[in-house]
Length: 430
Image (tube, rainbow, N blue to C red; front, side, top):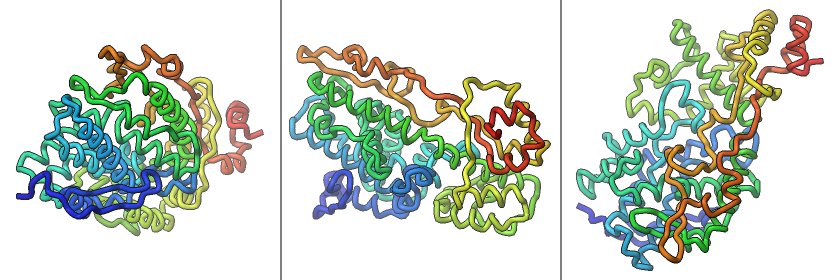
């Protein structure tokens, strides 16, 4: 049995965001060196965003280390100041949950989840609880320790203060990915004063709170988050690449279900298509595997699958026009015209709206499922931040953006004679 307090000679990762990431606990070091965690080196943090911002090649591995480091710094600050409201016995539980919170992510981040109805949080908990190297390392701390880590990630752990360090409106996960994504995309929107936030964050009566004097640092964080969502995460070019990738996978799944004979179809793809993935098969799925598969599929006899893969790999993305509303009659006309022009609208047309994305801007209250940001006054009163901040009220619940209709512009230009006046006008085809 290895004690939770077992230490090792300090290991240090050089990190472009946090400068250094410090590992002093043997359990953390051993978790990092498991095959399941090392797999995260082969999963990009931002899915297909590298198609838009060429520097966005960073991995879930580096992000997970960053979340661990921010959590470690917060807990160290709590321990140095000996806050009575912090349960010191939960230190290792928090660090493990922070490190492992994304271990179940599949290739291209969130892009494949809706096609195959897989959920990265489900697979994260399966990896933690299953017959894995990670589970064996965690069980050194006790047979129930893997379940406790999974409960934190599922947000079922009874001590909310532990959960909120990892998952809330101001958590270590969000703080790392904003800074890290801003750094690697080369934008300045996501920068904020992390050191200031770490100095004013407190445990208080079962909650994670911010000293009211630190409100302006949190306002800066929320403004940065708002800008990152609209300038990076909701970027329409990134959405185009995600749509094409999703259509590739939808087409491949449909072909498999129809009995199509692929020239190239390695395990575990049939299991993925049929919804029967085992743990070992799921762990085989990384972006190296998927990139190789897409390359081979450019040679498939199915013209739609081959073209979509070529578009994705060589960045021949769909163009888009903005729509004021989701006019079903107008979209129906476009679909009809595309079919007349010899294009399948199920794979070459899509309406997109940012509210469908897995990211959200700050909204107060419990409606988001994330714990709100709480301010602690000098008198000991707790208030939700939008009650005190005009800046936060101004961006909370702001719904921005229009519907976008994505389509292969160059093909429709070639076939414009087959299109109605309404379609040519909508798609700006002259």
